[in-house]
Image: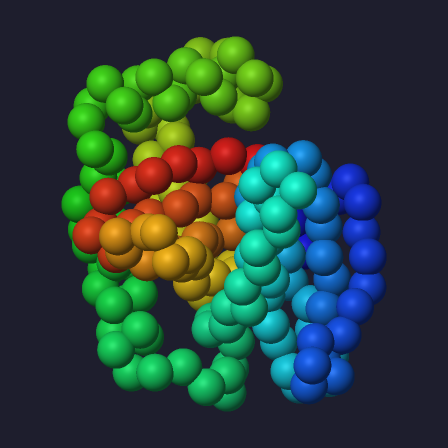
Length: 167
């Protein structure tokens, strides 16, 4: 469970009877994991005014979870690239602004550098015990992959560019 978003939790069942947790917080995007027995699912919830859109996505870093070979290969390639080259941001300015923003919000210690954030991202993505989610909505041009160590999440596009990292 991603602890940064515990606001209003509800327990529900989908049409197949699977249990899942739902978290709501204004117009924010929330990722949460719900597990029932051997089944593991995640719910992506996007609130747009009064309209709530939810998508069920697979958690695919768990042993024996069925995932397609293409997705597994794509994620392994993304992790491999980050391991070798480090995270690639859209621009250096985007990375520096992101670090500054996270320091101001108290998400990173004062004096943190872009290198510190990139090292933390590498650590999260390379740890096989951390959670990995596939994230996609119809209006997206690509799929995104969310890696979490339950303290920080990182979001990377299938194009290999970092989107964000936050608690």
